[in-house]
Length: 163
Image (cartoon, rainbow, N blue to C red; front, side, top):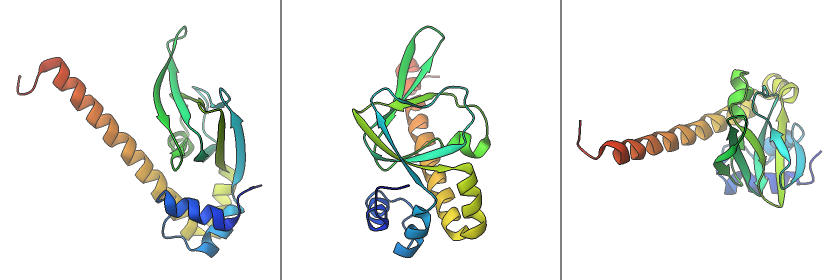
């Protein structure tokens, strides 16, 4: 169940460039497939090794991504409002490589669970395609940021123009 109205959800999507081609009636339909989740700082959304049965839009607050070597935990990234999280494991059904938890005092997420997504694909394929396109863009941003980080790291290690 959502506390957000369909109009608020539509505005959230427009402000954050999410599923931008969906009309207000499309978003109203999509809202029936989403659940709102409220978290407090430190609450775990996904743990390393979990296989994704849900993905989330971040509405409010920040989510931390951490990894561990079995003893120490290290934060490797943070995402805020307007981002989709959990989409990699959701689509490839492989274990998660990072732990995701609420970093802010309060975090609000919109969750779509696999059974609801499967229904959405059948009943409203146009909306499902928009969701998949959003996941592709989200992954593209991640890959580009990682590529830039690797490039900067390589430059730092070997220097520009050295072979």
